[in-house]
Image 1 (tube, one colour):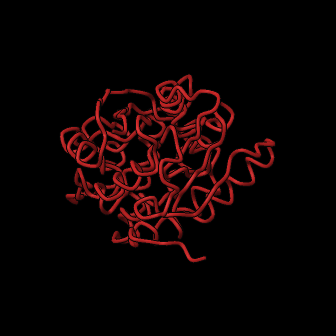
Image 2: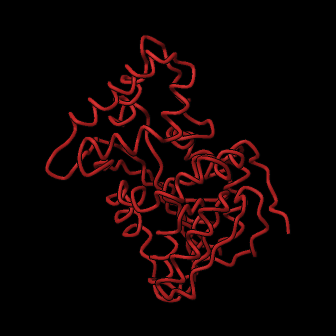
Image 3: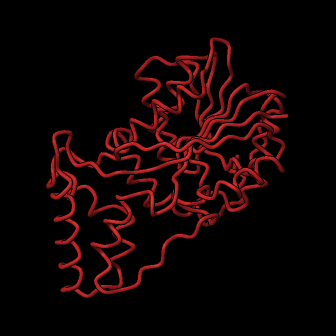
Amino acid sequence: MATLLANVRMAEAWDGDEGADWARDWERYDRSVRGYHRLLLDAAAIQRGDRVLDVGCGNGETTRDAARAGDRALGVDLSSLMIERGRSLAAAEGLTNATFEQADAQVHPFEPAAYDVAVSRFGAMFFADAEAAFINIAAALRPGGRLVMAAWRGVGDNEWLQCVFAALAQGRDLPVPPAGAPGPFGLADPDRVRAVLESAGFDGVELERLDQPLWLGTDGDDAYGFFKGTGIVRGMTKDLDDVQRTEALDALRATMVDHDGAGGVEFRSGAWLTTATRR
């Protein structure tokens, strides 16, 4: 059956090159946000018997951990390749109660009131229509069910983006992804997030500031070798000529080396931990 889609532009990216990158480098991406992962699961407080929905599950680390803690967990994502990665990792770990489905959580016909907890680790920021998406997620939760999400705060709270933008600018005024638009800052505005969730059927909306290091590699060369091939670098350098591109990549390498420490290459980063209860 064809996947029901509303978020077409994001589906083109995440079920294309971007998703392929993330499926290939799943271990690195999971490690990069390990601190947030632990805090998200602590806040979710999944109990035996809980049915969990993981929204924008990526390669399924959160889904698998939720399945270990609860009764069963379903991970949904726009990326077919990441969904396949999640399935293969769950099978390798013997997790028969972790399932995965390529789906657009904004419109997917979830079973009504079927879940006790909905979680999202940096996956709910990309909705084209956030209110419609959270209405749909609320309908999938039982009354009293919990929503727990991690999503980036703004550029000013994320050194890694500041440094990447500065390295790749090459004299250009690069546009910053706006808060509220589908993308990394889709849930960066706390007032908007609170209003959207309350309108969608959630009470007790709380946003807590989290600050964790974002890990990008074991050393400067490792981090640079990885990050230069990411979609964000491809997008920011595609309009540069050969000389400018070389200078931009040299600057990117330098900032990775500058942030090489005892734990590898780490940048300061900030996210919101959002919790709410379905009415």
